[in-house]
Structures are given as structure tokens and as C-alpha cells.
Image (cartoon, protein in one colour):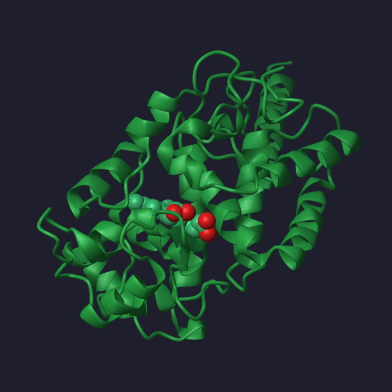
Length: 329
Ligand code: HEM
């Protein structure tokens, strides 16, 4: 009898081990393939709509990637960015989020997923998959996205204002903010490489062109020829015109961001700041002028996106699976 009990115990542990090895979940309870049984077509549905979207509107790749970052840094990756709050002001109304476009694409994806598997796929996970697909569809790397996040019920403008980083952040502010989210200095320099795609409004950097210290001067750390080029696109007082953040290849996810930084042509002070720390500087310089095939950037980016996607997630029975991404159930 005791022997049978022992054998049963051993077999049970073995089965458990096999299960864990086949369904590796990280400490936060996320795992690759979370919807494999409950909504096997989930990622294919997202991809289809992303392909259709970027075919007709290529510039949406930038904001559709950026959404996940802005979601994760405020209350964790819980889809709170997407809520239209019924009481008070939601995250969406915070200044750094006003330039984000493409929310209607997330709604379209959610509608398609609800039709296929109602109440299963969270809005937070949609943002994580969309962020990956935006990179893949601009010739960047593919990585396996961990899923299993659940949606939060709170969205507040003050949380967004205190957690999203301004474009004038210096290296100390950047490192501290990333560390507070459990991200490393390497994650900071790698994830900043997302600025290889997309556009920025003049408002985010025009102080560097016209009034850096309040005396009508320019930012001495920004290449002077580049300043003249940028001034042609952003006239004094123009806040809303958009410029390519990685001129010449802003529709392609590549390593050229690091080449720009090394030439003092990073658009934001937060980009230029990567030269002010020995670790981030070493990464920038070692990837500047690197060819895609020889650089570790693509692999690094996938790893850091997975790290970012783990920030403050709700899993298990926490939160909810929203039916509509703009409102709580
Ligand atoms: C490190 C601190 C960061 C700062 C201060 C920052 C700041 C900004 C700013 C000011 C813009 C321009 C927004 C506009 O005017 O439309 C922007 C654009 C963008 N950011 Fe960041 N960002 C940071 C990190 C990241 C990260 C970690 C990601 C993604 C992993 C990211 C992805 C993007 C993308 C894709 C765009 C282009 C958006 C578009 O085309 O509309 N950024 N960022």
C-alpha cells in the first residue's frame, strides 16, 4: 500500500513536471500560447487585421507599437490605456497619449476576436501582439509574445502623467523610471530602438531647435546641420507637424536608430541621453553602422519587449476580460 502511494506520488510529480515543461509560465503567470486551446486563431486574426491596416495606412505602425509601451508603464500592461473613463479623466487624455492614433484598429481587432471566441482574449494581450506585429510588418524581428494578461478596470490621467516619460528626460530619469518597472539599463537602450520607426510632432523636440535654455538658443548636443534640416520642417511655434524620427527609413525597423544617435542626430533629448551613460553608450556605439545580420539588436529587442510585457500584469482571476476595449464590463 505504502509502495503504491509512493509510486502514485512519484507519477503525479512526473506528470506535473512534464506539464510545466510543456507549458512554461513565467513568474507572473503569462505564457506563450495561452490561447492555444481557448482561441487558437487569436494571433492569426490580429495579424490579418494588422496586415490589412498597414497596407493602407503604413504610418500607423508607429503608434500601434507605442501603445503597448504606454499601456505597460501606467498601472502595468492591463489595457488601461484603452479605457474611455466614465468618471474622471482617462489615461488617453494625458498629453503624451494625445498623439497616439489607431485606437480604432484595436477596437476592430477586439470585435473580430469577440466574434470568434467571446470573452476570451484580453485587450492588454491584443496590445502586446499588435506591438509585435507592427515591428514584424516593418521588416523587424519576430518574437513569441507571452499572453494571459487580464484587463484592469481603472484608467487615470494622473497615473499617466506621473509614469510616462517626457522627451526631455535625462539619463538619470530614464534609468530610474525603467528600474522602477523592473527593467534594466540594457532594456532602456534596446527598447529606445523602437524609435527606428514612426514619426514625432514638432512639440516633442522644438525646444532643441529654438529655445533650449530660454535664451533663444539651440541644443549643443544636437548636430547643427540636422538642426537646420529640422527647422525647415518645424517652423518656430509649429507644434503639430510630424517628422520622421529615423529619416529615410522610418517605415523600416532597423539598426539605423543607433547610427543616428552616434552622429548626434537623435531626435529627442531622451535619445541623445543614451550617450551619457557608459553602458547605454557602449550599446549605441557597438550597434551604430552594424548590418542587420551581424547585430544582436533584433534578438535583444524581442527579449526586452517580453520583459516590458511582464510589467505589473493581472493574471488568473484578477481584473477581467473586457468585451469592448474602451469600457469596463
Ligand atoms: C525611453 C523613453 C521614451 C521616451 C521619452 C519616448 C518619447 C516619445 C515621443 C515624445 C514620441 C513622439 C510622439 C509624437 O509626437 O507623436 C515617441 C514616439 C514613438 N515611440 Fe517613444 N519614447 C520612449 C520609449 C519608447 C519605447 C520603449 C517604445 C516601444 C517599445 C517607443 C515607441 C515609440 C514609437 C514606435 C514612436 C512613434 C509613434 C508614431 O509614429 O506616432 N518609445 N516616443
